[in-house]
Every structure is written in structure tokens, then in C-alpha cells.
Image 1 (cartoon, chains in turn yellow, purple):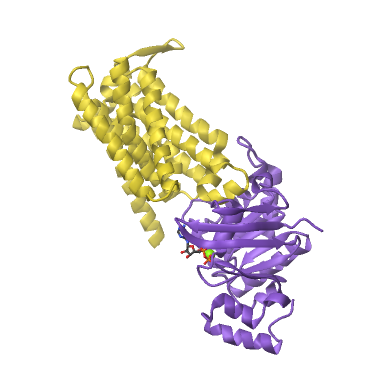
Image 2: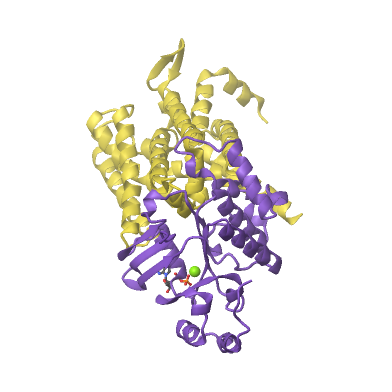
Length: 292
Length: 257
Ligand SMILES: Nc1ncnc2c1ncn2[C@@H]1O[C@H](COP(=O)(O)OP(=O)(O)O)[C@@H](O)[C@H]1O
Ligand SMILES: [Mg+2]
């Protein structure tokens, strides 16, 4: 292990902010992601993360800045509406759910890419940044004073998203659980499974939008699925999986920072790579346990 | 006259234009134990789903305890068909039993001591206490079924809808479950059970609903468990049928426990 990397990391407040922002991002995505994974709805996460793109581009064209709350709200709305339309197409018959999902979200993503290529040159919007994220740039963006501390806005945005995810779990955990495990029982006992699902998908859309600056629209789907999938391999209950997601967030943000510093590459990608390595490790351990 | 526990009127259901149930018109008296029987694809599960409001009927209506479903939420208990459960889901036996107590919690409530006690008591009744911390995917078929029966008991419902609770269970579990169903009935609850085995049906149930896309017959076992009616329901599909019919004709197949 190269000691200098660690010294550099710990001495630079920027690296600490970067790690904090990526840990918040992983946590924010991992919490609603857990419920998507146990419901076997990972594809819905895919749909949301791709369909927020046109919302982001249009919002940017209108407001002219990536920091605008209008972008966050508009993009989340576009992602949420997309999954609602998919659900409606599926329920109204004739279109299979997976087909409907595939058609709608790829179309939305294509619209976003076209808009991006058409207008990005004329305004200051970097396509790579939107598609793959660029936390290193975002961390030097706007700053907000909090208790005398000069906090990068991106840390607050991702932190807010993490709080939103955990708040959802803290408030309506039981409805999320029964609605995921047995929607028929949930409906029969007045647990409003449809509305619970809409809330879950709405929160997913919000955290994905918050995550797009960190890891980009494309890779946020990896953060929805990776931490939860690792947790599912290790744990027997949903609360334990949520704990594992938090651990995964901390480890993959530190590990991602090390990889990014060592290889000199995009931090978002490094965090995702580190998360993937973690998943493989957990999987290998779970295989050994099973064979014993 | 008593309000029927379950009443359907001209209930018709179809999947994407393909009719599955036709004009189902039944009244189930309260405090009875009814077996719902018919060949595969007869629409038994579909009937339960329509009663629970999981699928919308094309026409007709359902009343439970004399009211539409929306007004009796929480008073209806249910045991799903095995195939519709995700056995890989990360929940324990206790988690599942506890779900039976969620009805009164509201959006932000969480199950407290009383709910936990109810879930534990239900697990005791089904003999699942020792396995309470087991993940549901690590259970045998009989234990899985006991878990869902426990959840239903924890619901303390007035009407129970059970889809093939005897599928894939061992003989001991089957006896235990039928004992519990009898107890529920004796407490005045109404139990409807989808069942497959003609041999045991007249011993297990006091009433039968014979289905094959429409109601073939509905009434007490004495009225309904007749060779011609069974023949009409199953259309001679079961080789076993003639055997059962012969025993019924000889008068040795019927009779309540
Ligand atoms: N979700 C569905 N979509 C389309 N057809 C279905 C669906 N569920 C059941 N069916 C069809 O409806 C008929 C009745 O099914 P079901 O009620 O499950 O029968 P049973 O429970 O009596 O075996 C069958 O022909 C089945 O193929
Ligand atoms: Mg069935």
C-alpha cells in the first residue's frame, strides 16, 4: 500500500468532501434500491435513471445552471412519470411490463442524448459530465455555509438525498415491506400497496437525480442495485440489508477514492468499480459458506 | 336471516378478453367451512382474487359481511397459493407472521408488544415457534404452509380465504391445519379453502363449492357430493373420479368428522 496516497487523502479537505459526497450518493441510491431489488424491480431503477436525462437537459436549457433546484425537481418528475406510464401501460393490458419498460426508457434516454448533442455545444453543459458524472468538478462548485463550515453544495445535495431515503424507510418501513413481499395481503389489509409503490419510485427518482452529478445518469443504476445485491447475499432480513448498504457506501467511497487517486480516473466510475469488487467478494464468501 | 359472510352476484372475470369465470352467484353462510373444488384452470384462484379485489371483475359484485370490500379491510384473512410467494425474499418466519398484524397500523405506525405477542401466539398454534428466526426459503413445504397459516391466524379475521393450503405438505401438517380450520369455524369465523383431494373433501368440509368456469354446484356436502355432480365438474378428467363416485354411491365416502 502506498502511504503517500493516504497522507494526501487525509490532509486534503477536498478529498474528504469527495469521499463524503460519494458515500452519501451510494447510501441515497442503496436504500430505495434495496426495495427495488427485493421486489425484483431493478429494471424500474434502470428506467428511472435513464429517463431523468431529458428532464435534466431541458431544465438546464431553461435555467442555464446545473445547480438549479428546478433541474432536480423537473428531472425527478420526468423519471417518476416514466415509471408511472410504464405501470399504466402494463396494467391496461396488451403490453408486457418488461417490454413496456424497455421501450419507454430507451426512448426517453434517446431524446435526452439528442437534446444534449444538439444544444450542449451552445451552452456550457458537458455531455460526459451528465452521462458519467464529474464529482471532481462539482465539488469545486457552489458552497454553502453550515455552522461556520464552508460545505460544497454537492455534499449537501447528496446528503439530503441520503436523508430522504432513510426517512422513507424510517417512516413507512412496514408498508414498504408488506407491499413488496405480498401486495395482495397489503391491499386486503388496507396498506395501500399502489401508493406505497409510487412513493418508492418517486424517492428513487429524486435520489437518482441527486446522484447524477456524482456518478452520472448511466451509472446511478449501478448504485441502485450493487449495494442491495451485496446485502441480499449476506443478510436474512431487510433491516440487515439496509445496514449492509450503509457499510457498502462507506467502503466503496473510500475504496473508490483510492482507486481514482491511484489510477487517475473518474471518481464515480471508481466508486462503482469498487462496489462491483465488493459484490464479487461477498458472493465468493457466500458460495464458500453454502458449500461448507 | 343472517347476513351471508360472502355474497357474489353474477360475478364474471376474464383475462385479456378470455373469460375465466361466468356469472358466479353464491351466498356463503357465516361460521361455515367450505371447500372450493374443481379441475386445474377452473377459476378457483381467480374467484378468490376477484373476492379480494386483486383483479377487477367484468361485471357483477362482491359483498363481504354484507358490505363492499373497501369497508371490511382488515377483517379478511388470506393464505396465498404457494406458487405466488417469492420464497427467496429476505424475511423470517416471525416477520411473515407479524405482517398479519399490520392492518391497524396506519402509514407511520409500527408493530409494538401487542402485535408481537399476537404473531408469537399464532406461531405457537401452528407449531412454528422454534423456527421463528428461520428465513422462509430455508423451510420445508409443510413448514412454509404453517408459516402462512400463522400469519392468517395473527390477522384475527372474520373471513378466511385460503388457496390450496394443503399443497405440498406432509400428513402431520395437513392434520394440524384442518384442526385449526375447524377451530376457526367453531369460533364463528367463515373459512373458504381451495382443495384438490376428492377423497378427503367430504371429511374436511361441511360445504362444497364445485367450480368449472361457472358454479356447477354449491351447498352442503350431502347435497353436492354426488357422482353426477362430480362427473359434471370434472368431466371425467380424473381417473380417480369413478372410484370416488363408487364409494359415494355405496355411502362410505360422505359423512362429517
Ligand atoms: N394472470 C393471468 N393471465 C392470464 N390468464 C390467467 C391468469 N391467471 C390465470 N389465468 C387463466 O385463468 C384460468 C383460471 O386460472 P385459475 O383461477 O388460476 O385456476 P385454478 O386456480 O382453478 O387452477 C386458467 O385457464 C389460467 O390459465
Ligand atoms: Mg389455483
